[in-house]
Image (cartoon, rainbow, N blue to C red; front, top):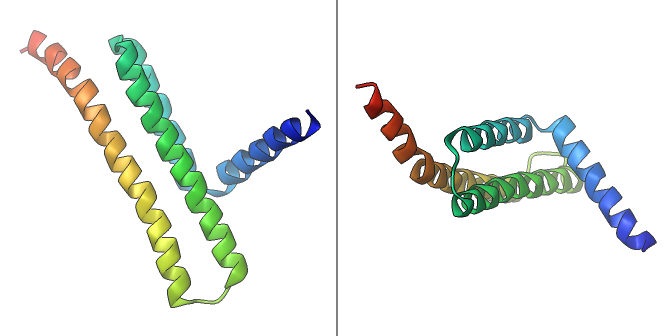
Length: 122
């Protein structure tokens, strides 16, 4: 049981580290909060919440993994290194792909609802 508790503590420390040191992580959290608020306002369906939750989890997870790769790469090779740059770029691309996929999910869910509201006022 102590190991389980310790693993949660380490994960919490990781979240704090990423939150404090990574601007993009905080941006993703702020965007997630706005999406959650919009979801409540528009009363999205349960399956839509599932898609939104998975999308948010994917982006936040990718951002954490990207940060971990960057921390490790900077530790292993503090000087400029073309191979390390490729590793960092690939990790950043994973974040970008997950964020773009999440935007797609958001558009599929929110665009029709927003359009219905706009049509009421046209």
